[in-house]
Length: 183
Ligand code: IMP
Ligand code: MG
Image 1: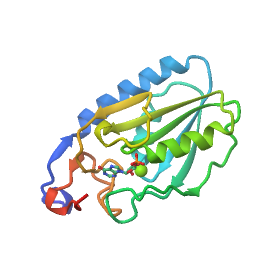
Image 2: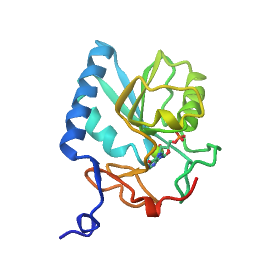
Image 3: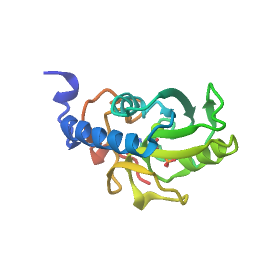
Image 4: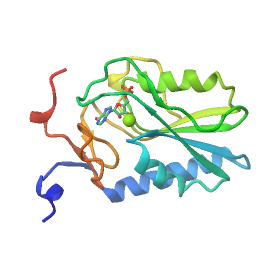
């Protein structure tokens, strides 16, 4: 048995459920974009699997870009300060942009990115978040596309990490509470 399966982590959404929802989101985005072009901006590292899968359900002329921002460090809770570690490679001025993020949690990260990107005057700017934790919101921000809305649980897998581990789990799993830091 594999190391990760042996860990017996509780599954919140399995790979089939994720794939079905991601396909729906891709179809919806395709309809909304119509005949326009699209720049998909993935937020490293957590959004990488989501962007890879979602993009293959978006049937429009699209390009990829990636940003990396500082977030939770080795723990689980945001420090509140966001710093750009890797900026966009290409200008997004006049373009249709879709930010692709793993989780919309406090909203601090996406508020920061939205503000920064809007300064470049894109034609449109939308957000796709695989998971949304509305009860944790500090900044006023919503995603245009949400995979699953969840309560205040700490999740790992399908790109999401705990101290950089578990990103390669194919399912979205719950981090056992005994490992979760007190808030
Ligand atoms: P926000 O700035 O608080 O909205 O945080 C967003 C980022 O926090 C996400 O991109 C994730 O990287 C991270 N994050 C929030 N909740 C979780 C979780 O349950 N598991 C893993 N990472 C999380
Ligand atoms: Mg992230």
